[in-house]
Structures are given as C-alpha cells and as structure tokens.
Image (cartoon, rainbow, N blue to C red; front, side, top):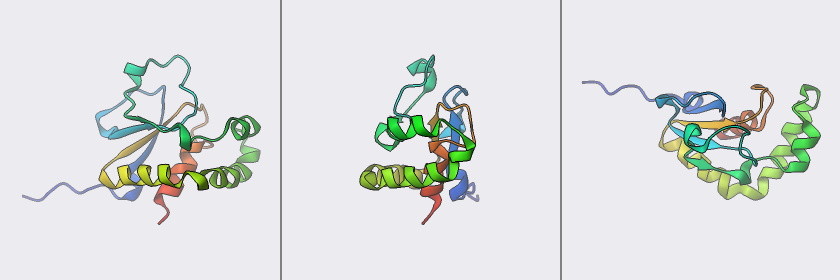
Length: 125
C-alpha cells in the first residue's frame, strides 16, 4: 500500500491568525508574536511553542504598523533583526523538517505581517 504523499515545503509551513480555530492539519502550532494575542485563551489557542525571540522588536512593530506602504522596508529590517537569532530560526526550520508547522500570528492583515516573512525565510534554502 502506498504511503500518503508528504506535503511539499510550501505546504509544510502554514500561516494562521491566532483568532482562527486550531485544526488537526495545523501540525505544530508556533506563536511568532512578542505579545500574547488579546482576548485569546491559552487553552483555545493550542500553541505548542511560543517563539517570542522571532517576533519583530517592539520598535520595529510600532514603526511598521502593518502599513502596506512600509512592507518592503519592514521585510528588510525584520530580516536584519533575525540575524542574531539564528539558533531560534534553525529550531523553527527543524520543526518544519519534522512535519507541518503553522506560524500563528495576531495581526489582522494576513498578507503583511512577520509570519509571512518568517515563512519566506523558512522556505528559502
């Protein structure tokens, strides 16, 4: 009997808002915000790892404010901030090699947030 196909790299790193309900297909759920999402109970969030050290600094987060006009610069500055946190990024890569990982974030904007940047970094060899 053939084994079910494993998802490709893109399918192994997923993104989800903290306000969306957890699902069995989420795999390992990793919160990548510095602050716990407002109004979300810890039990309901089903977070396996909270990697605050991979979140943007408070200063960068406030400067960005999820303004799409600042998106390109935010990506560059955030990647620079992550350089000293190589061990944490490698830990996250290791989780992704083991199976599906869902990067959980609190931002309303699903297209312009740190989880999008982290996913891109994880998928880049």
